[in-house]
Amino acid sequence: MDKKFDPNLIRKEFPALCREVKEGVPLVYLDTTATSQKPKYVLDSLSHYYSYSNANVHRGIHTLAEEATAAYENARVSISNFINSPRSEQVIYTRNTTEAINLVANTWGRENFCRGDRVVMTEMEHHSNLVPWQMLAESIGMEIDIVPVDDRGLLDLMVYEKLLKKNPKAVCVTHMSNVLGTLNPIRSMADLAHEHGAVIIVDGAQSAPHMPIDVQELDVDFFAFSAHKMCGPTGIGVLYGRYELLSTMPPFLGGGDMIKRVELRRFDTNDLPYKFEAGTPAIGEAVGMGAAVEYLNEIGMENIWDHEQEIVAYAMDKLEEVPGVTIYGPEADKRGGVTAFTLDGVHPHDVSQILDADGIAVRAGHHCAMPLHTRYNLVATARASYYLYNTRKDIDKLIEGLYKVKKMFG
Image (cartoon, rainbow, N blue to C red):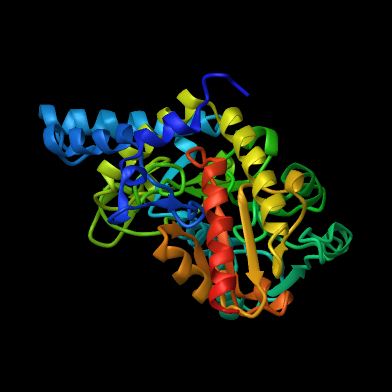
C-alpha cells in the first residue's frame, strides 16, 4: 500500500466524521454500503457551482451558462476516464443505479425481448436489478431464470452455464453483493454470456466506489453505479453502455434536450448521450460526482481496495470471536468491505439501535435484498460496511458495542 495512504488523515477531510452524535459520543460510521460520507473537496465543489456558476446547461451563451455546461461535461469526461469508457458519450447521467437499470429494461429490454424469451438473474441481486426485469417479464411474458447462491455466498457457476444453454437474451448480475460482499467473476461471466449471444448488465453500485473499474477489460455491455456511494452527492448516477447498443436504443424520457428537432406530430432524437437526458439535469450533482472521481483518483483506487481488504479481514476475525455472531458470505479474500451478520437471540434492529446509542452507525434490515435473506432463512441482518476512512479503531468500537448488546440481552 502507498505509504501516503493514511485513513486517520483522510477521515479529517470528512466533516461528518468529525462530529459527535451526542455530547461526548463521536460518530463511528460503518454504513457506507448504504451511502458514503462526503469530503470537503466535494462539498466545496457543490458550493462553488451553486454560488458562482449556477445556470442551465446546453441552452445559453452567457458566461454562467457556458461555465455550467463546461463543468457538467468535464465531469462526464472525468467519470468516463474513471471507468475507462472508450468514449465519454457512452456515459449517461441518471438519478442513480436504479434508474440506470430501469432505463436499460425499458428501452433495450422492450425493444429486444418477446414473449417466451429468457433473462438470467442471480439470487444475490439488489431489488434494483430484480424488480425492473420482473416488471418487464410481467408485461411481455418473458421467462426469468435464477443462478443460486451456495452456502458460502458464492454463485453456482455450473448452474449459470446450464442456464446459458437456454439462450437467454440478457444476464443481469451484481459486481459485488451489498449483503454478502461477494465479488463476482464478471469478466468470465461476460465471456460466457457473449458466447451464447446474451447481453450482460452489471450493477456496479458496490464495486465502483471501492476498486479500479475498467469496463473494457470487464467486457460488459451495460454498467450502472451511483455517486452517493463513492463520496459524491445523492441524486446522480451513471449508466455506461456499449456504443452500438446505446445508438440503437429508443429514448427513455421525452422532453427538452433529448431532441434535435420537434414538429407538432413528430420529433428527431438527439445524439448520445443527450438522447437519454431529458429535461434540466442534476447539474450541481454531476459537478459533485466529477469532483468525487477526482478525489478518489488522487488517493488511488488500488490503495482504497487494499485498505478495505485489510479492514474487512480484521473485522471478520474480530466478529468471529464474539460468541453468537454469524457472518454471511465468503472469506475475506473473496469479498469487498462489507460484513452482514446476526447475533443469536437479538433482532438486528435491536443490535443497530443499541450500537447507535454509542455512536456506531450500522444498517439493519433486508438491505433491498429480500430473496437473498429468504435463501438463508433470515428476516434481516445487521450490516457493517467499510471505506477509505475507516480504521481498526472503528472495528474495535463495533466489537465493544456488540458485547454491550449481548450483556443487555443476557
